Length: 414
Image 1 (cartoon, rainbow, N blue to C red):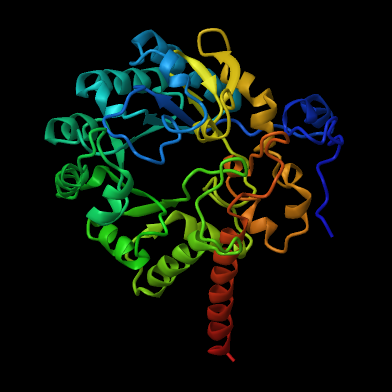
Image 2 (image 1 turned 120 degrees about the horizontal axis):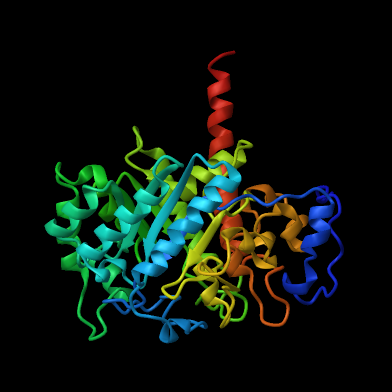
């Protein structure tokens, strides 16, 4: 039986469009639903990048709005954003928020500008709530002067790398085709030294079935990351991922299963892997931190270099304008975005799922998969993830292994 729905949730006005006008936010509120305030603000400090990654959703996919925006965020824009964050924290009594510096490539903004930006945000939120700051970078500009400025300000640093040199160079190259691997490896060796290691947040790796999974994982382990995030490449039903001739194949799921077994069998665990940890927690009745699994409300908002308040930028992979809310930090509070149907749809859990997902045995763990991967031109986001088979393969495997371990452990107490 499908789970109960949120009281007051209306039937979609147009079932062919989701969410848009099909989601009546006013009726939701009348039925008692309330939004979850934003905890994370992704700040697009620089619109350009010094790599040309084949799978990049910003430059290589449907939404090309980066072309019409300022290359660099102006100080007046980030000051307005800081003010809106402070307003949001006061309104909702938040004890902490997180600022994520992003791009393009955020380090192209330079160490002086980034230092001033972080100082301004900390000054604005000082005494109001704790501010955690993180930067997600390709690592090419991560040298000692940059690390000194960032680490002195308590900025956590995440670096993107896709495994071995061959794996990384398959997709993550310069525009002229040259390898980026050596520069990133130098940065990671520096980041791993005692002086800078406290600032190391972890590695981000995009799954590629062409890579040997265990070799890829072990190459990442070689840099001593405190955590690893594995992300499926952004795709959807109108722009599906490349697959083998067999449409029922699950290459991404198979890849992740192999890495999971290597990770799970290590004693002690050698690093944290958010996707795997979240699936285990969800299987045991907990909640997730990841957008890839689970039904927890998504509490992330994006501010572009021109001050536009937008939904999470992975939606740029779906269609032009998919992220837009029509709001800006100069004219609108962040609360305004909490009323947008696209944001609401990612906070109502099971009520945003397709009928296929509602009748799936692992819906509470999978949660329909990554929201951006559910898109289909003509009917929007109320579909299963285009990686449905892969997610089912991974989640059932993890659940089976955890269940077997729990059963064995219980047997030792009998």
